[in-house]
Image: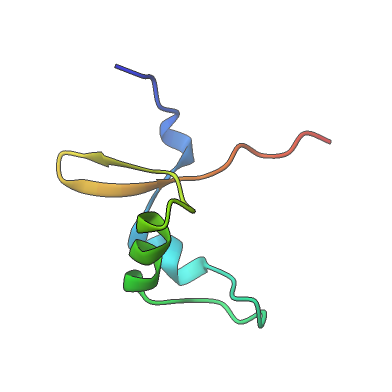
Length: 61
C-alpha cells in the first residue's frame, strides 16, 4: 500500500470552491472537477468511499 501525505489531500468540494478559472474567477461546480478527474487531469484517491484531490507538491524556491 503506497504512503500518502495527508497534508496534500483536499475534499473535492473544497477544491472546487477554490479552483481558479482561466478568467481569474474563483469557484467551479463539483461536476467539473469530476470531469477533470475522468479526463486524467487531476490526481485523486478514494478512501472509504470519499474522494480526495491529491494536491501537487509545493515548488521549492
